[in-house]
Amino acid sequence: MVGSGGREHAICDAFRRSRQVKRLFCANGNAGIASIAECVPIRPDDVHALADFAATNQIDLTFVGGEISLALGIVDEFERRGLRILGPKKEAAELESSKAFAKDFMARYEVPTAKYAVAHSAGFAQLMLESGDFGNESTPVVVKADGLAAGKGVVVARNRAEAIAACSDMESLVGSAAAQKIVLEECLVGREVSLLAFVDGEHFALMPAVRDHKRIGEGDTGPNTGGMGTVTDASLLSPEEMQAIVDTIIHPTIHGCVRDGFPFRGILFLGLMMTAAGPQVLEYNVRFGDPEAQAVLVRLNTDLVDICAAILAGRLNELDVQWQPGSSACVVLAAEGYPGKPRTGDVISGLEKAATHDAVKIFHSGTSFQNGERGTVNDESNSSNTPLTTHVSPLVTAGGRVLGVTATGNDLSSALDRAYKAVSEIGWPGMQFRRDIGKSASAAA
Ligand code: AMP
Image (tube, rainbow, N blue to C red; front, side, top):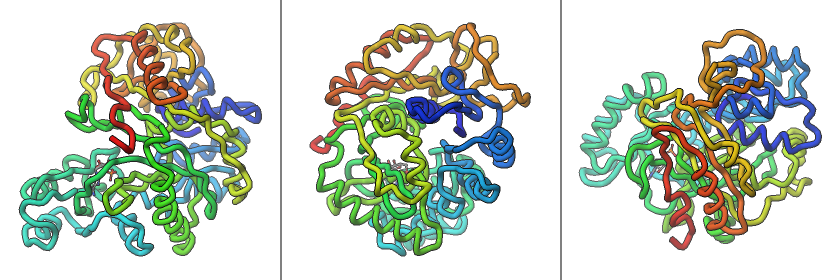
């Protein structure tokens, strides 16, 4: 497993449920992952070191959590060396790593998405706005950095003036590499939902629809975060809406990848706006989301190793991927100061008791052990090659998002109830979380 967040903890947990997994390694891992996998200090962007590790340790299968490794071509490198790995190759990963590439791809294959224009510099984007080539004075415009920006590269501007300001701010927001090109988009109105699928190049298996909560504050207020919670529930998408997404988005996307010469193998994540004119794509991701993975994977009943094998063999159509019926919820607990500069090093209490609650799993993101025995989430200073081992020192906060308290239930309210009861056991100074995860989640809302 490559990665070190709550998403990777949830994926490791799914692998641990497989009887086929004999040993599980995670690079880098975190304090929670260390209880179910052997953590090794290799960064996700060190593709060559990861391949060396997989070769030396005869790893049978590598699964990639995040976009950085995929955008750097980890899959191409592993395959070149005859190592089995699950994820899209670099070219297919461009659906996420370049928004301009993704928009042109969607235009080519008539995948419904917002009207757009690509500017080859921030200055040019400003000119397009000022001259009226894109948008008009009073309509909202969405301004996006082309490259990977860890969720910071999108500004929904209320009018032309704000959009122009967003263009000039973009470089300082996301860095010059990600902001080299700017994508301007029409602002869509509707209900947001995400749909993920396992894809083997030709066939796909849908996961339960999932909704995230991006803002730090209740009622969707305050700044954006990596995600403060997620729910899965049948009411998020009606069967008709699901069918429309399959027909107008998933089929053309999979076929488009084949036609363009980069069949998509891995996890396809659609960020969608359900508009009056039907579903439209806001973004493609080429991997699980965090915290979408937590809420989705706790409901996975099929062995994840079997799914990976079917994907690699191009036989996903022969596997019946099963999900636990009902719903799930993941409530993220964050450190004081998040999403700005989080305070770290606070001792976390109540975790063991919370973990005994029925149908609850607690996934770690930014945690470590107080004496530093185990790597922290973003611990890039640890250059030794010794696997991080178990200890007894107290668990402390080590990042912005700290834990994802995740529960399943027969319906959304019971999943939420279980998650929040477990949350009430946990605490540290300055802990923050949203009390309204899953409210107004349904299609009817
Ligand atoms: P993205 O990273 O492209 O998904 O954008 C992040 C967030 O910005 C989305 O979850 C939406 O809330 C919002 N957004 C992105 N594109 C649009 C659009 N064309 N219209 C309205 N909202 C958008």
